[in-house]
Image (tube, rainbow, N blue to C red; front, side):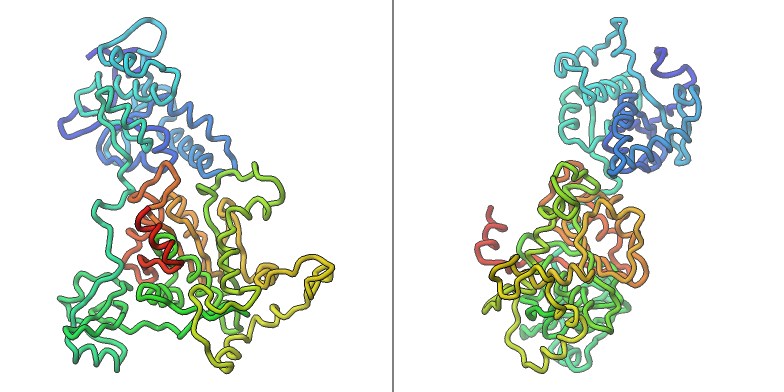
Length: 512
C-alpha cells in the first residue's frame, strides 16, 4: 500500500478487516450529535481536515446550538488527539474502533491524481466547495483501504453527489427511529358486553396477560364489544385499564368552556390533566387542536389557589433552536411576535374580546353555578383596573387591551423564545413546546433537562411538516423523544388525526 505523506502515516491505526467499515463523517453529523464519534462501535472513523475548517467557522456563533456543538466537538477531538502524531496515525476509541484525521494529498499542489480523482473532477469540477472536497477526501480513503468506505452526511444533496462519483453514502442513523414504527392513533381491544358493563360500573378492568402483552404503560385504547359498544381507557400496567378522568370542560380564567370534540381529544385532555404524567408528546396535523387544547388544559390547572403549577410557559423554535433573531427590528417582544402569534390567536379564542355564539371547541351552555366555581382564584387579577392610558369605553384613548393580556402581564402566562432556555431551571410551570418536530434529538434533550420537579412539559407538532434541513420524519426530536420515552411511568403519548378547525382546513390538510 502506498504511504502518502501528510495523508496517512506509516503506522496508521486504521483497522483492516472484512467485518470493519470505514465511515467518513461530514460536518453536519458532528454538529447534529457531537457524541457521534463514540457511536460507530468497532468501525474506523475518518474526519476530513475540511470538516475542522467548517467547525472553526461555526464555533464563534455564541448564541446558537450549532456554535455550542462545534465547540463541544473541538473539545472532544482535543482530548482524543492531543499531539501531532495522534493526528496523523489516528487513535483507538473506547468503542474498539479508530479515529483518523484525513488530509487528501490529491488536492495539494504537485499534480498527483488517480482514476477516482479524475472521475471526481469530471463530475464535480469545482473543488473550492467544501462539500466537494469532503467527497474527495472520502474517495481518497476508499482508494487506500480495503474495507468498505461510507460517507455519513445529513445533507441529502451531498449524499446524491457522493453516489454519482461512485461513493457509498448514507444518513446518520443512530438517532433515527426504526422504519415502520408509525403507530395508529389508538388500539381497539375486544371485550364482551358483560366485561364492558363491569368496566363502566367499576372504572377499571383486568385485561389478562395475553391481551395486555402488546400494550405499553399509559397507552390509550378503546374497548369495543361485539355489539358495537365502546369505552375509552388508559393502560396502567399489569393488565389493568382504567376509565379516563376528564371533566365536562376546561376553561381559562374569564374564558369560554372547551370540550373535547372527538375520542383522540379526550385522550389528550386526560393526559394533560393527569398530575402523574410529567411529559406528554402529541402528533397531529394542522387543525387537530394540539395548541388550543394544550393551552386550555394548562390554564385550567393554573389559575386557582389549589393549582400545583405557578403558571404556563409557551415556546417554539425560531425555525431551529437558537437561530439568531436579531435581524428583526425592535425589542425582544417585538422580534418574537411574528413567531409567537399563533399562541396569541389561541388565547384570543379561549378568552374572546366579544362573546361568540359558536367559538372553536366551545362547550354547550353550563349553569351559572358551575361558572362561578371555575371563575374563582385568578379572577382577582383578571378584574384588576385597566392602565390609565387605556380607554375603558374604547373612545378617545388607546385601544382597549385584550382580555388575555392581563394573563401575560401578571406572569401567569409566559410566551418566550426557545433560544434562551439553556441554563434555566423551570420549576412549577406547565411548559408547552410547540413545533417540536423542528428540533434535533439533542435540542429536545436540552429542553427536557430544564424541567424541574413539579413541572410538566407537553411537546406537540406534526412530523410531516419539517423545515429543518437536517432532520426528517424519523430523526426529529419529537418522534425520537416519543420513541425513547414510550412506556415510562411519567410519560404519555397521543396522536390526533381528525381536524376540527374547519371542514376546509381538514380537506386542505388531507388533499393538498
